[in-house]
Structure formats: structure tokens, C-alpha cells
Length: 165
Image (cartoon, rainbow, N blue to C red; front, side, top):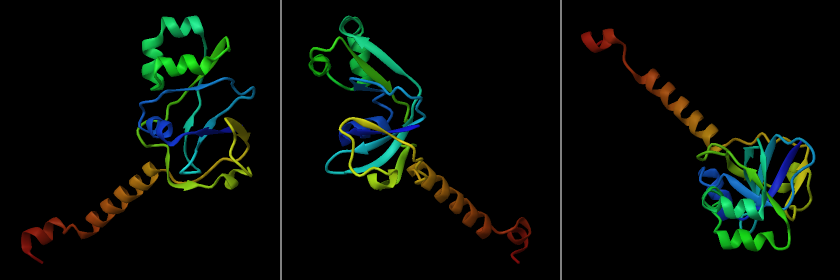
């Protein structure tokens, strides 16, 4: 099962850059998840990429205060905002993200309808669809491969270099 996570563009950008490795949410999926697709909210309003899900961490208010420097650094969220997000809750969950530098960002953002969903989720939702859109890394690899092929085809043989023929 996969997930579509609604997220503001500024947070998505930090996830794709590998800087934001914790995304705060008040709950977690009950089903095992493999891929978390990022639906960027306005002005983008499309699914722009994904991260492979590998864990959640449950954080209490006490745990937050004891580890605030690490948790604010990894989530890129100021401690005051995390405290505010807690509200009256006793716990929140950190979704651990491992998107890495640009490798999981789609070259062309995908409409939410391609995931069999009519409108974006308020926070997150399940999807059975697996997206096959090319990532920026895929396109870069293809470009490098084509450049290498052109270079090999245009490179003269050693015999031609020596004899000029």
C-alpha cells in the first residue's frame, strides 16, 4: 500500500534536498506502506515525487523537550511550531523521510487524478496506485547515457588519429 501526503512546497523542497528527514503528523497508517508520494499544496497542486517509507517515531512532549535540538534540526521546524502542533495531544509522530538530494523528485509533476483520487487529502490517504513517472535523476541518467553514446560515436579510432585517415 502506498500513501499520498499533502505537504506545502517549502517542506517538499527540503525533503528532496535531503535536509528534512522528519515530517510531523498526528497519526500514522495502520497498514504497511512502501512509498509516500508528496502532493504539494498550492500553488503547485500536483504530486511532485516520493520517498521510500521506512519508519515512524512516536514523540511525547517529554521526548520532544529532551531531544529538541535534534528533532528541530531533522524536521526543519522551530521548536515553538512543534509545541504548537502538539496542541492538547500527548504524542505526535515523526514520519522518517529518506528522499535524498533530488533523486526522488519527478521530472514532470503528476496530477492527483492519476492516483485514482478526486481531490487531495487533508493530511494523507492510501493509494493502491504505483506511479511510474520519471524522476529528475532518471532524466539526468538518460541524458548522461546519450551524451556518452554520442561521444563514443564521434571519437575517432586510434588508427585514424595516427594516420589521419
